[in-house]
Image 1 (tube, rainbow, N blue to C red):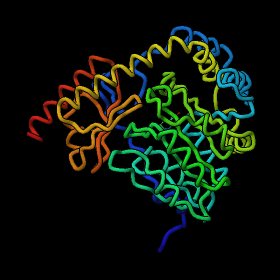
Image 2 (tube, protein in one colour):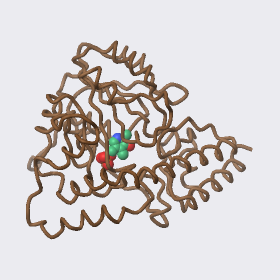
Image 3 (cartoon, rainbow, N blue to C red):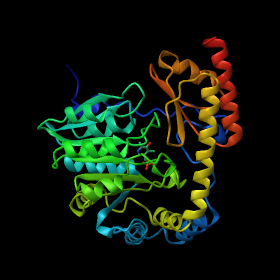
Image 4 (cartoon, rainbow, N blue to C red):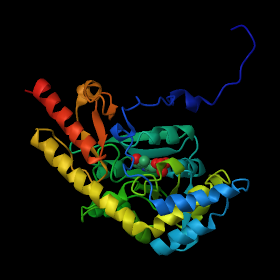
Amino acid sequence: MSGPSAPRARRALDEIPVYRPGKAALTEDHKLSSNENPYPPLRGVMERASAELGRINRYPDAGMTALYDALSKRLGLPPDHFAAGTGSVAVLFALLNAHLETGDEIVYAWRSFEAYPIAADLTGATTVRVPLRSDATHDLPAMAAAVTDRTKVVLVCTPNNPTGTVVSAVDLHAFLATVPSHVLVVVDEAYVEFVRDPAAASGLAALADHPNVVVLRTFSKAYGLAGLRVGYAIARPETAASIRKATPPFSVTDLSQAAAVASLEAEEALQARVEAIVQERLSMVAALRGQGWDVPDTEANFVWLPLGDDALDFAVACDPVSVRPFAGDGVRISVGAPEVNAELIALAGAWRRTHRA
Ligand SMILES: *Cc1c(COP(=O)(O)O)cnc(C)c1O
């Protein structure tokens, strides 16, 4: 090789894809590709956030005192059980950085959340992916069997992005009884507010019995604050402290903290919206199943169509509605505003008539 040498990033980055933004939708309402909340922010939440604009010359409260106090009050755990960051994805990055290094192993289901491979690969640890079962649920017995002496972390996504399926309380309990107590079990509950299945697992209940559990939650989905970037972990104080240490200081702005606290106070209004989204989800699933689609049971704000090799073609056929295809696997469709959901259902019906007749 000739020429001057150039700086080179760590090898772990070679496998990580560069982020490519999805195709722009016709209108924001037509964007059913990011599991966003279709409702505009509550006026009271906007007012509390706007009030912070007058003091953006100041650094935010790095201790996130008001946010931790509000979470403490809401969830009934001391403030030292929380660690917040710029979205629960950032919290996951900090958590994995704090707990994994080269030579360690991390186990997660696949297909699951697209951010997992990135967060895991950046640490240099080795990934063990356990395929979902045929009903698109986590195969927890197989995941337990995949745990070795080197395993430090297991990720459990419930409801699972992108399939919407939940892990049952019984299955999670059995899993936690098998996994050694030094293995961190991360229960990613980004969509927990949309769960209506009484048999579904609760990360908080699991944490009460197993201190090696970490629960991840976010204000991005049910609370409708995706643009402000606030998520948090609930964990035993030692684990929460390790996440806080690995998180860049001052990352969550006071504007975001204020909006998050205001959202916790406006829970009733937000829950009404969540319930409306759940009702829309139920009618979307019923309509799609009525067209003959094999839709897994979803407890999230999205539905999964297992289209296999047709995933990309279907996504193109959904134009002008933007959906999220995963090549060779399926398509994830967020529950949006009722008119757009109706548009999508009509497109899905037309597709079935021409492709599966
Ligand atoms: C959306 C999502 C998150 C949270 O995203 P943030 O906006 O970073 O809080 C976490 N996990 C899963 C599985 C998600 O789908």
